[in-house]
Length: 355
Image 1: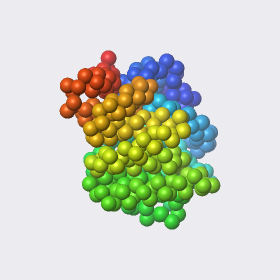
Image 2: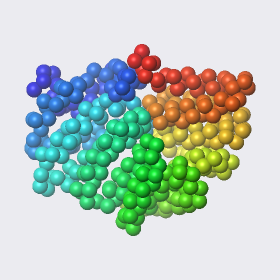
Image 3: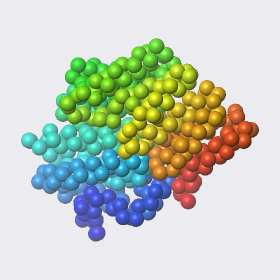
Image 4: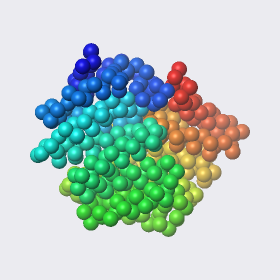
């Protein structure tokens, strides 16, 4: 066994001394003093059927902490520890048999799918798809239609963001094959993704139809008694995503009242990143509609929100907003706003991160 490294060290993730500045690869934060993948590999052979169950229990606690951290501060500070723990989850799944296997598969699917999301938020779409594919393998073995459908939705999202919306649309359609077995919230989140894929493809009618149905399902989801993978898909969230689709479709004036209503009704203050996305999309809609005063006001709010987030997803929206405002760069108010946006975007560039 590698000296000074054990499973307890690995599972804790060594968060002491973490800074909010990621390394060049977007992995371990610069101040993180933890084990490397090379140190982890020899430990995996020591993980047996007997030890897999307690490791699963420990990882569940850590996973809950990761989910909370991701909601509040974004993904960048947890990509490194998650990357180290992925092989542990894979090994635990490989050695678990019998009555414990279904439970292990369910957690492995959840952990690897969440890892896929974290890397997506960190703008590493190749790694995001890799882990989401692994999550789908576990989901298919588990045979749970709801888990399969949700994981397919995640694949559709990554495919669309990777520049292949037609593939994303096809995967979203395959997720809706399980429509009758899903909770309202799960139907909502898949319809929301299909709306987004259709919007990228320029399919106005199909995107609008899916967005409307997603909001209806999200409203029904408030009354559902069952737990699922999409507790975040509230009516406010679904409406915000509908507004984003209208911005993509080139109809900012349709998007504006939807996004304004979402911002006004956003009550879950633990969903910091999603609220930042809502306000950034609102700023984009105002800019596209030519309302510079409101665009700059919303942009200022986004800059404040994004300074506490390690989310390249949000920064990507800010970069788009910076570019959208370029045509009014001579306007003093716009010039000041763009300067603030540029400083934030530049702070996430690899050269700065390597610092």
